[in-house]
Structures are given as C-alpha cells and as structure tokens.
Image (cartoon, rainbow, N blue to C red; front, side, top):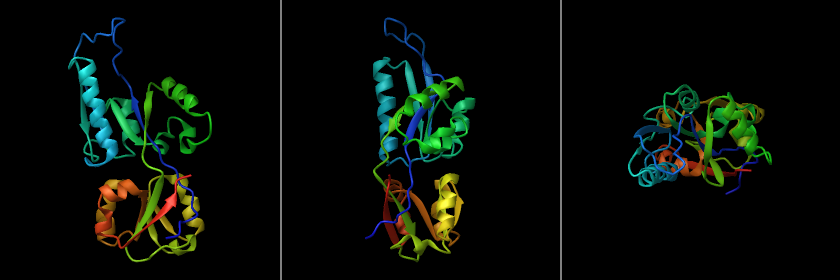
Length: 223
C-alpha cells in the first residue's frame, strides 16, 4: 500500500503542575494523591506506561505518592488536558504535543532540533513542568469508511477528522474537508456517516477499534 505524501506529527508527553519534591534524604513524609489524565484507551501502551509510572511512584515513595490514572478521556479530552493541567483540574496530563501550543507556541513544531529544553523552560514560566515524552509510534494513518486512499488527491471531498488546526491547510489544499475533533467522538462519527475518515496514530486506530467501522487504513510516514 502506498503512503500518502502528507506530513503529520504527533508526540505525547507528561506535564505536571505540582509533583512533590522529596527531601534531601530522599524520603517522602506527606501523602499525596495525584490525578493523571489521558485520552488513550486502557489497552493502549501509553496508558500502560502511565500505570507503570503510578506503580513506581508508589514503590519509590513507600506508598506516600498515589497516582490515579484516568484513561480513555474519562476525566478530560485530549484538547482539554493542557488547560486542566495548568489550572489544577488534574495534576499530570498526557496529550499530543500540539495541544500545548497555547502555552508554548513552538509545540506545534516539536521536531525542530534542540528545541525540547526551550519548551521545558518556557512551560516552567507558565507554572508547568515537562516530565518527559512517551513513545507513540513511528507512523500515523488515515482510516476511511468507503474510499481507499492511494495518493493525496484521493482525499478530495472527504470529511476527515484531524487532531490539530495546523493540519487544516494541508488537507484543504488536497480538497478534503478536515474537522478538528476529539478522538472520543470519532467512532460514532464514522459509524453514523458524519465522517468519511479519521487521522490518528496507527496504534490509536487499532486500540480504539476504528477498523470496526472503516474498510480501509493507509499508513503515512510520521516525519
């Protein structure tokens, strides 16, 4: 299957407002409960990584740090997570990097070399802390309900879900009708014919079971 020559980017990372700092002796004296929000399903590797984070936090703090993982958008959607994290609605948020552009404008273009330290410092001035990045996978894909995509021009006339406004010009240039939508709403949108297709990571397409309502999936390079 040929890959579409449309460049997309996605990277997940953790941000926290108030992770407790242990004393010099490395002992956490108080008990903390931190709420971690992610839009990824329970079965996704990103959510499993969050579970490991919670487990290790408990082990290393002797059960003084309790991280509660809210998966599948149960607490906040992908696009709500940055504001929720920065305002205290949750303590730790995992979401796509471009959703943080409101606080760090360059996050829409995270792949520019040597910029990660700049993002971290900029976020700190806004009250946040970059804890790290989670691997989302090398490739993304476009799942479609009726039309098999073989070249960029094939998206013409299709209403496609995209996850960030920075992708609007590219898809519109090929004649598509892109709409920014939360991943939680995509399955029903595809099932009911409101959407003709959706853009996301291949792992997300798999774990969210969009293949149940789509006939075709094409991989596109995540460059």
